[in-house]
Image (cartoon, rainbow, N blue to C red; front, side, top):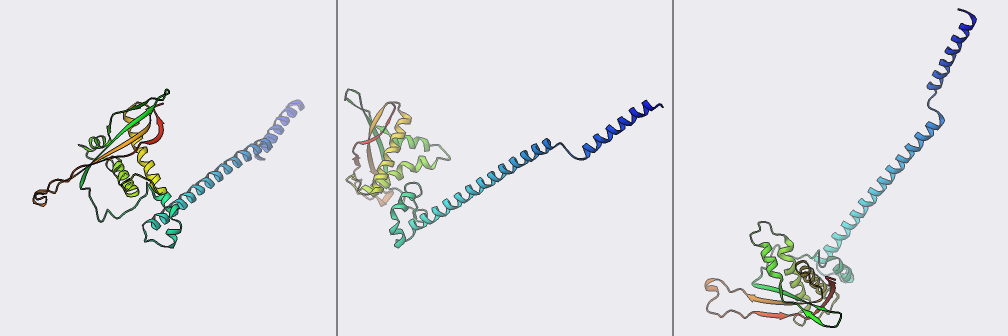
Length: 245
């Protein structure tokens, strides 16, 4: 081999050695920077996710603890703490977390109660259009009948709302406490939402009518006593959020 051939071969081997050394020394500085940037972004994302999860867990624990304490103060005998914070306790418990002892001492209804509602709408010319009576109880009864698993809402929502209303208003339909105002609004919202779901007409006032018929005692327990007369209670007109507009 001549000198020229040897020089070319030596140059090729020298270039191969340089490439090998460069490969052994690791990636280029720019490639390392990109890897560090991606790795740092992943670490920040993981830290933010862990911090978010910890925050959610803490909030859930605090809410659960506050709920247990407020419900305990609601069902516990009256004491200094429950009397002092009674507005806050009632605002949290009613109407969704109300507690009572009827699970252990049930008091079934001894009457058949029919709740009806009608609506009124004031037109642009000042005229008032009043609808016919709509039977809320019949809708609930039809949903329960022949249903092996009727919902708690269908069975008890309207009935419990009315029971709470009579407990807070008595017989004169006047709200004298904040809870009475809340229960009245709760009952009117239930009636308005159900009417709006079944009828498409516009209305901004509702009126409830409740017919209560006592259930006669069976057999000899009833004796020869005449049945008690039905009670027909007509509530005042209530302003509600406009529907159907």
